[in-house]
Image (cartoon, rainbow, N blue to C red; front, side, top):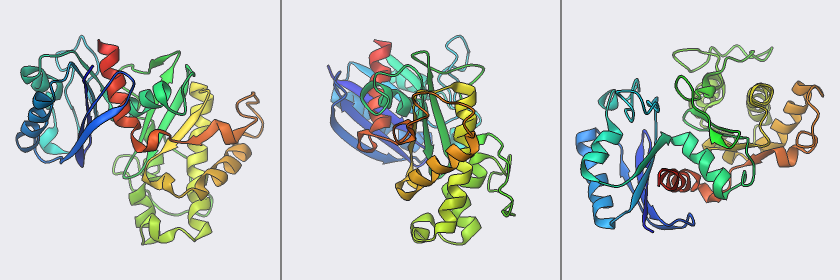
Length: 288
């Protein structure tokens, strides 16, 4: 089968064709401009590919309620040109195939649980830490939806005792995204993360905030594995620091087979950075 995959990001739109094994056969990237500028190229690509189904993982917030009049819309995004845009509807006008739809980070979670580092599990969390923080959750074998979808990058955190930084998030200040995403690192320290790689103090603080969030996620969702991806997590020294801080903060409150081996509980993303596209393939297969 030819399966289409659209990873719709705020900066770029990745379009791909794969098969039912999750193999990516072709892939292109288009800049995310306005819908009028961007959508024709997306539709033309999938038309020419002759796809039999399409999976879409989109930046959000998005409406995932199939009973809603605005199902498939990008809703209150800060990208004003895309606000209240009927993304799925516009695709359906031109591409007459089954379509699965979810958030981009839920798609990444689905990619990991289908083919990656959460394979075989029915409960896991995927967290991407980069320009922002996104969290995808699978619970009891299904992607977690509710009133909306998880926006767990904005959980409020306790500030580290010596940290006076106000936080980057315009809504919450000291949420996980406001304290630990890439722009927060750059504003706090005056340099981008890649230019701070050798400064231990930077990553000790970063690990404290990420670990604090992971403890909260563990206590609420009880995942069998936590997967960390995104640009910030390319600082591989973070994993050891996060595991150490997590152990301190959890303080042996939760003791399970999983949490006794943090090297296998808190792990990097797999799939060579293709978890989003592969998750979109899985979304399409689910819709079929």
